[in-house]
Amino acid sequence: MAAAAAPGALGTLRAGPARLAAACCARLGPGWRLPGSLRGARVAPAMWARGWAPAAGGSAPRRGYSSDVKAEDELRVRYLEEENRGIVVLGINRAYAKNSFSKNLVKMLSKAVDALKSDKKVRTIIVRSEVPGIFCAGADLKERVKMNPSEVGPFVSKIRAVINEIGGTQRLPRAIGVSLAKELIFSARVLDGQEAKAVGLISHVLEQNPEGDAAYRKALDLAREFLPQGPVAVRVAKLAINQGMEVDLVTGLAIEEACYAQTIPTKDRLEGLLAFKEKRPPRYKGE
Image 1 (cartoon, rainbow, N blue to C red):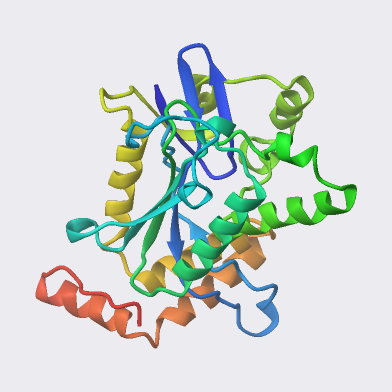
Image 2: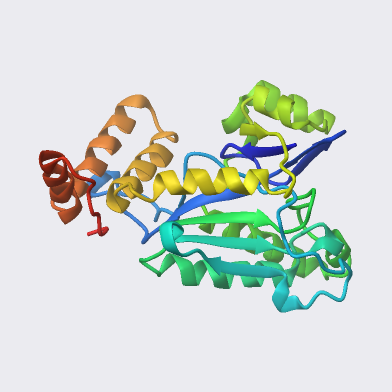
């Protein structure tokens, strides 16, 4: 069974035959600021798309899963072409360590994201596992135990910063509510895919296909739905959602108005109106 996770989930949940892994679709683009008095901290350059579409047990080439995997192969960056142009797949490939975050993997992720967020041709990214049956086991504790205490804090901060660059994780209580979050955290309970979906932790639960990449295929389907939409409109919509969740409704509505105002002088807005008038698909350029 494969699953697609909602914003707020990260890591691997597994119980019996169900294996839940997390991956994400994220919009890339320059950071946005709110105008005037609403302006706050800089918004992360990459923003969450509607939901995560995890790739549990992807269709990675079969190879010897051992500790001899080259460091440069632990993260594979693939630019899709043709009808999928604009989608980039980041494939995590540390099978021998259950795709846990090592210093090297975090460094590679950070470098990849920095490159992607400045590439205007990139519209959506999918983070997937290339290891069957798992997405990410969290931090590499075997490596962690060898670290000096002074290294641990900066390393954890680096992991958090990298995750935030691809839309970040909402705190569990924000995703599923305070009471249920406490229950799960205090009990260290493991959920299967159906249970995770029932509590709102994930968006989709899928039957695995023979190729073992059902969740990745779902992620790709979602990414294809995002591609035709206007980049400017998506950016400010995500900004309005993310900022609005942190404030009261009145302030949230003001943020929404401020975000919409940013679309008014854009060429994309005029193109959308013209395309509607001419009854044709719009050709957005993110301008």
